[in-house]
Length: 343
Image 1 (cartoon, one colour):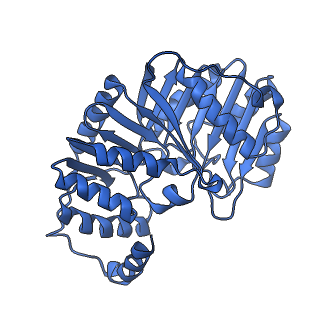
Image 2: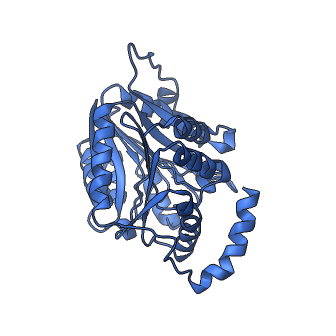
């Protein structure tokens, strides 16, 4: 499989900006947060320019995540010829992050477009080859769900792959009662024999997920979770530490990274992995539309493990025995405990 990993926002932005700049026919972009404040990579102006030059540009944003776009900026995007659509549901967010250029190169992962994320670690994979068609098919379904009507895109036909499939797309859409993430995580966490590696910025596991991780520990499986020492939200920090203090006592190892890490991935044993837009919280599992790629490709899994090993080098292992709750934890804990029972 032809693939490249990017391990921080700026590297991913650079590659995505170059892919859009070099596009000759079409650009399909789906993003949760799309802001116009990225100083080094002006995606806003570039997309308008490419559309003005005759490329087919489809842009799908979440109405809440991209709420800072002004009416004038929205008007300018559409005036340039871009078909701009919004996911707009009261409780359901379009949390997917996908870019496809010329229907031949695709990016998928956790990165958003906003300046605050410039120095963050993240995980994005660029792929070429037959997998791009699967990502395109996923984008088209999201395009239709957002109200897209371009028949030249909607009526595309896709042939079924021949031979062994080493990667496939996971589409998760609670608003359509499609809860793929829970099925994927439960199946593979319970089947793990040696090692589970989870990467997430926000760790607020539902009861079934906590149980699956505990059962893995009881089977002798090494369960490792990489989270940032400090996220971009004070409240998220407190929630993360609350759950870590509970699950670390069950034998789960938490690596606290010195830098904000927005990546989302799961590695099972030596030969299976998933990378996408999902966080390990109730929002992703119960409310957000998410997408990711599940791999059964030894080279991809090996590379992901190498990335996690590098990230562990500047991390410290969370110790629940010496962790001292903050004052705010005493206020927040009763609320989290009640919510934990409901979940």
